[in-house]
Amino acid sequence: MAEENSGEGKSRVTSQQMALALFEDLFDLGTPISEATREIGYQRNNFFTQIVNMGLPARRFLDAAYFIVAQEQEARDQYDVELNYFKWLMRYDSRNLKHLRTIAEEAQDAKIQVTDTPLDRDPNEDDLWVSVQLMGMVGFHRGRIRFDVHSRLVPHIRDPKKSHWLSLRISTAFTRSLARAIYDQILPSVPDGRTEWIPVEDMRNWPGKMGANAAIFKYFKRDWLEPAVREINEVSDIELTYETRTESSTSKRIDRIRFLLKRKDTADAALASLADASHLYKILKDEFNLSTKQFTDISENREVWTDARIQQAVEYTRFKIDRGQVKRSPAGYLMRALRDNWKMSEAERTMINVQAKLLTDETDAQVAKIETQSSVARTIASREEEVRARMNEESRKGREHFNSADVKSRKDLVRSWVTSSQGKLMLRRMKLDASTVTEEDILANADLVWYLGQFVFGRINSSRMSV
Image (tube, rainbow, N blue to C red):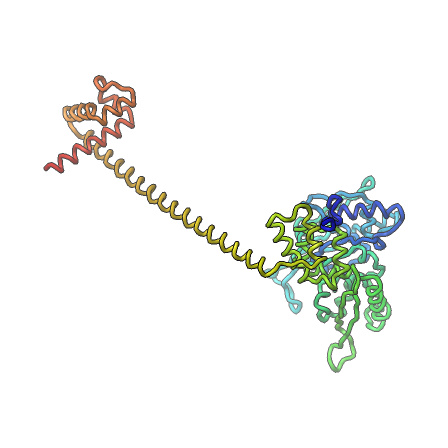
């Protein structure tokens, strides 16, 4: 089964390592990331599509920074990479560092804000409002860039819940700010096939500053909207159309827009559609650590390799792993199961269910046995504690009687205990001579006093019984 290990002969690489390798291959050739032959991207939180009033270069700067944060195995206080690599990730071809600093400053000025204040009233002190900078410190020095991101944002970047696939190869291909802004906003809605109705006034704020003519819809449509839609359809993995509506049936003023969306039939779009099913993507990426080539194979066969078929292959591979039948590469075995449409038979499912029931029954029986043993042990311990408490109380009463007795009675009690079998045994253990031990010797030893008290209590109790 040589095919099982296809693409696995080499050591597995992360998206970060793969991106670095591509950079090394393409940078010297002057090939930008938008023309890379292999996909580079990450699962971006839907949360970050709400970034508005930001130009195209600053968006690319954030994309590059967040890609680096997303690929790290652990969160860092500061991220440090080669500047040329960072510029390649954001498709910044200029050597103008002064301009790059300006872009970094714009990214630092950008904030993400969350509030529960309704749009139709002013905020009050009980309302929630949070504002966080999207980019913290940025520094350039000796050909490297260092930056940090607010600690509250890092978990949302590294382990997003609701997310979508962002391809840096696609996102860096945009040349129009509005095209990139629209693309960002619509990505989470692609699985639904359309967006909600969006106020045109809100959309005008997405890319940052626009010309005065943008306030008039026919000019906004001609000079900004239509060119942006054409560019999205040309360079991205999405086919986009839109429809508009007026304020009311009696008004001619267009104030709402809705985008209709469809994934293109390309490998990029297939990978993105797979990433839209975030739970399945995370299984393939985190549990099986599929290589870029394997993801590309899946992307190119998505018409046949549906989510159901992928889940079927995952289930079958897990079953074989549990039985110890996958010896080398789980990822390679999964791809073979996917390619050959392997799936679990009904007999295997029945066997698993029976084995699971037997294991459950055995576990339940073992738990019941342990609980019974624990109950018995607790009962015995409780009884032993009761006995100890009773004996301590008897010894205390015996000592009280001894202490209140006259001198002659005490001497008689000491002599009787010393010559008793219990007294002789204790004295022997203490390596004391019964013929020479005194009352003072006994009272100076806590153990001897305790046993003397027990002996005296027994004498008292016997006297009462005889009476």
